Image 1 (cartoon, helix red, strand yellow):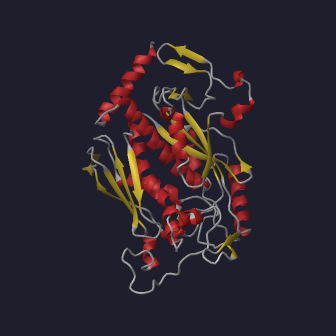
Image 2: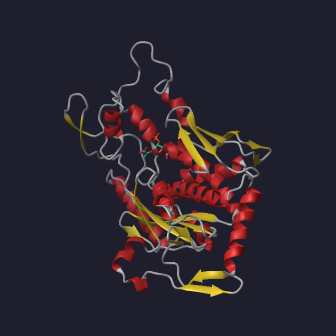
Image 3: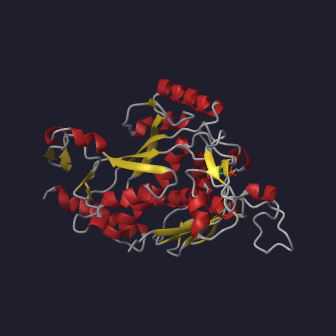
Length: 387
Ligand code: EPS
């Protein structure tokens, strides 16, 4: 069972988003300002919609933290929706007196959860689906992820990401911690300034055409301890845990590790990483084509994965749909949306990856306190050095 688990609740235009992060060891320094900085990163990026100019996401920590440190109790987080004030009683908890003032939504948008959700829950108003399936929920993921990042920091691990493709424009993969500042300064979070400019031009083109664009983000974890995950059961492999959380992010359609899909067309001699050993630092690899995981276990090298995001499903020039109830063919609806959310999804991916890595490390090394966790991880590093 997961050691570090979380649940989120809340709608896009309701009062706000709630998250409960359970299993965080005691003694972790948590400051709302650090969480807010991650929330701000998620809100930024070229190609986002008007909603981000309404919100200024900020967390309220409602439990589990006292005098700046986690207590071991569940961490309770709340991010208010400023936009709720503009939605009147459309999301009211109370049943309306008489006819509801808000028109029911009856035209499902292709590619969204709209149709499946309405059929699954027997809804006459697709609004219920739109509200919870909205990518607004990822703000809660990012808030929890900010705490997980702090915990990984205690283990000497930093999670970072950069955009390596938007629509038809791609940039080189690979980054180091020295690149972080450059990536953060780019409106599309791309390390390569020329490719970044082309990506922005592509987003402008999609906007003019009433269309949307997807892309690819690379996520890296530097300094993650070796020996986390195992080959003994498939669901305990570190890759299977990471793949599951990456695919839990809305609009993510694919994930690969290290050389990834590229490995399928190469001979084994060009895929695997020769093993080395040096007195002092211990075992290593000549290269890192595996992306830091072999046999379902972390090797101690940088963890590298890529995630592909499909273009946002809401189109200003809508595709065909069918009105529910009448079955009349109609053009789909436009609901305020982003043209491209690839830069923002990198922040969400960092969060879910950090949560999965912190969870797997806690499961492996244990610890009711941060000090116990870090001591066990360090002891393992020392133990394997001279083996
Ligand atoms: C988003 C909030 C949403 C959308 C977008 C991302 O807010 P609103 O619906 O009020 O404009 O802007 O969500 C989607 C594109 C989607 O499909 O749900 C956010 O905070 O990330």
